[in-house]
Length: 299
Image 1 (tube, rainbow, N blue to C red):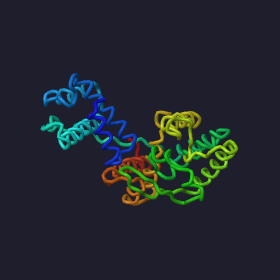
Image 2: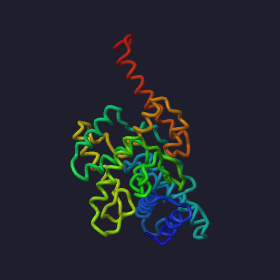
Image 3: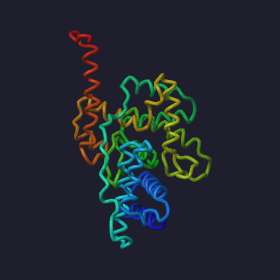
Image 4: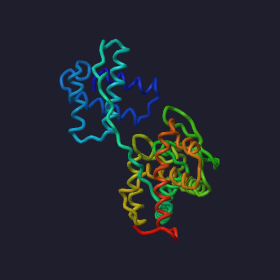
């Protein structure tokens, strides 16, 4: 990684409060550009070189969403380079954003969520209690997986009905906890405290781990959900921590929740991001009507 790219990522972390996930993604995107451009990398690339790199993204089979993120990373890097006086031009200025299809989020039915929760509750030992708490929290609050795993233990010690969550861009919001989730958290706290060695310092994280972050990783949570999905008779490819967030939003809208309320609960800056869930909910309701209405006709 060039010193200029390192300086850019440091600026993103310090000045724009970018999350570790965003920084990691931008680092991969810029490394891809540097590797493709070859000698001189981004700092010596011209418009033809940048456009050739960008065109190669689609030939390599990358999705429109990934290509759009890589374009954004390179464009932001060059704006930073201009501001620092490292370059006097922006060779990325003519890159057009790729057209992205509107992909509906994967979700689970209410019955499938119940089956998944039942499967997690059937697991034995501390790991089972932890997975129940993770799953209940994710579905009850709609937290992003990064927000869920970054929860600190002191945030739940007093059995709150709401959590204060710092989301994207450092913005804070309230996330609700229902009775089921609160009971699962209390059970996990009991198991967590009992497993701690005497006089050993307590971890600050609600879901501690021996890894480098100090807390459970998204990948490990996803692996545990896969196992629970298999037990529940659900295709594990349809289940992930993010799918639980999708289910939270979809089921709220199906139950009649206001779109603006769901936007606030999810922490979306733009309501257009939330509106995609209305399509999922509408499809589900239409299916229910066709299947159960006495006057529905089979096509």
